[in-house]
Length: 80
Image (cartoon, rainbow, N blue to C red; front, side):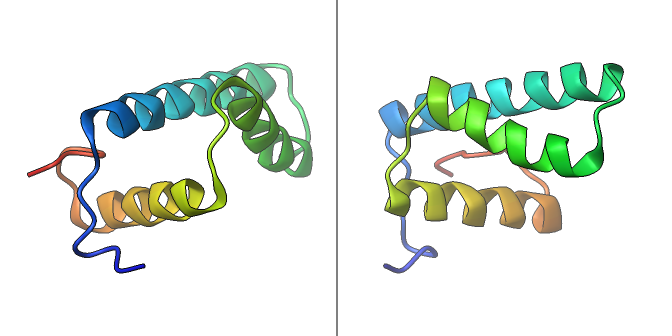
C-alpha cells in the first residue's frame, strides 16, 4: 500500500477523527488519574479501537498520517 498516494475518504476521515477524540480523551483522563505511562500507552489504543474499530490497513494509514502531521503540520487527516 502506498501511503503517499492514499486519499482519505470523507467517511474514513470522520472515523479517524472520532478515533483520535477517544484516544485523546482517554489519555487526558488517565493522566489526570495519575496512571502509569505504560497503562496510558496501552489503554488509549484499547479504548479507541473499542469505540472505533479500524482494520489493520486503516490503522497503518492512521498511524502514518498522524506521524506525517507531527512532522509537517497541516490539517490532520485532510484530503488536500
